[in-house]
Length: 219
Image (cartoon, rainbow, N blue to C red; front, side, top):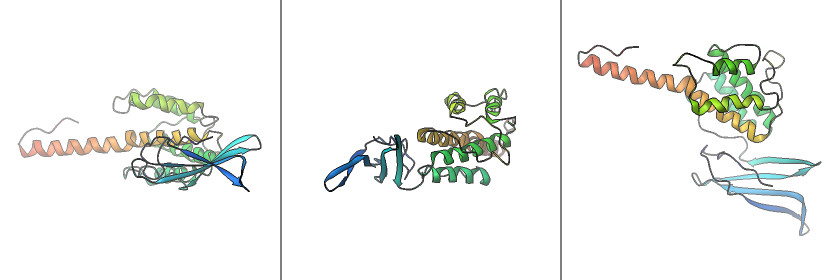
């Protein structure tokens, strides 16, 4: 049984699941179904270690090195309170996928609140986002399906956030918790990075037009 890591926890680059599995031994005999696995990242050449096995009829996986999920840096445009939830969700992923998903849920809902998508429950707020008609705010087709899909993760979108449910434990698989982080990263680009990049391009164009004595570009 091997963990199929989606992204290198060291450098944040996707890597092949080139896992090698080894049994645990006691007195030269394997110990049950427990194994430890190693994989090296072809980008940064760093090693990831995991332990997996069966405990009381349930599959168990735990990344033991590195602890946390050191994904790509948070863009500077992301508000600090939203970035903090994302970073904590990354750091606890290997320890508790459910806790990571709870933090991702709060991070996602806070992003939607900030952009004006507020309703009774995350599922309805996602509907508001997907039904956006403002051409400047409509989600790219590349991320619409993934944003919509998180409503199928256990009770991820079942309840509104309030003082009692803001960090409600959510039943998800480890792969789903990691997918939540990837969706959040894509929304960081959509909500914060791309608008600032567009503003910078417009400012540069206007500077060139002004220097040439021409009218500025339209808003």
